[in-house]
Length: 257
Image 1 (cartoon, rainbow, N blue to C red):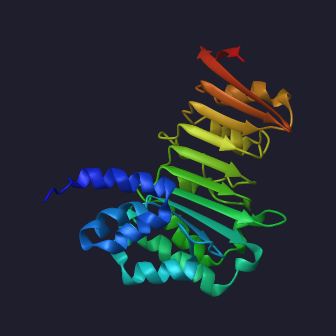
Image 2 (image 1 turned 90 degrees about the vertical axis):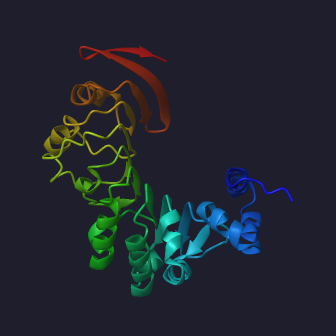
């Protein structure tokens, strides 16, 4: 009998995760040997929606129960996406998410997105949820964070990240004392304007990649001054998007379009 090495199974399960999630789930249920290998991929990249369509998308209460029954699964979660809606603001839903984020202690990427007619203030979320999420974002393993449609989110919570994506009006007030030495890439969908807080924060960054939406190209000169280390810049001016590569030589830019 020929027994394939675990590395072969691991590669097969990696491919199944991206092409046929249901078959990967079937492999996890076929044999204890396959279960451990398959679970590493089944739960490596998961999403939480209020209404779960299946696959790698879970309902919050179902996922919290699963992780409570099998806590070892939380160690496999590298990427977690959480979708919030206006009708999600109930105690049970946020209690479930709070429980989940306390278990995924090896998380590397977090995506938090609010779905509604307008942005929602960070302060509107329950206190226990905000505290649990802030603890999760402060994990040493956390490297990439995206926050969309949430206003007033404290940027200081992301000081150890290498990639940050922001969509909303964020709180830079306590960020000036942080140098953010690891931050390499920053995406800002809604540029808040060159307020003193933003300027003080941006000057401390050591960015290489910047993707930004600005209302006018007139602010670009100031932008280059506060982010002199940027080598790759993508601008979105309203409905017009321009990708440019900027090489920085003593704070002077040469643009290649």
